[in-house]
Length: 166
Image (cartoon, rainbow, N blue to C red; front, top):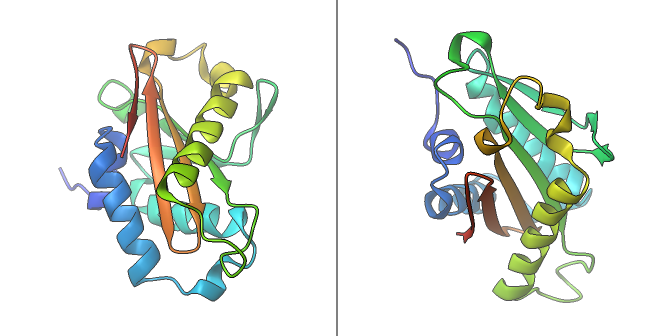
């Protein structure tokens, strides 16, 4: 079977957080310009949507849908054909409030943003929309904290409730 996944997408859905963070940072550095991030969170969101186009056919990629008690950034829900082989993924972005030219966030501050994003997914019950088709344990939750051409990533899975950071 043809597998159209990129290393970035593969690392994301497999929960290889260190490699996913490394790959996403390479994309931020190698592909994007500082000027691409004028729109803040929307820019990272759209960049990720573009990267996930390789997953169409394997996943339904959803953006900015109302679910639970809010609106998630991105959800990746396996297509019927791949439902037994892949898990659903919910991604949420948090971006530094201060522009890079005013203050450069430390790695710890970016990690705190990623943790805030992850907490939002859980607190606002974004998985509620899909709980009729999937067990809570199936979901991979991904928080991404970013500023300029840098990001930190954390993941959480209810089945294995340890927070993992890239």
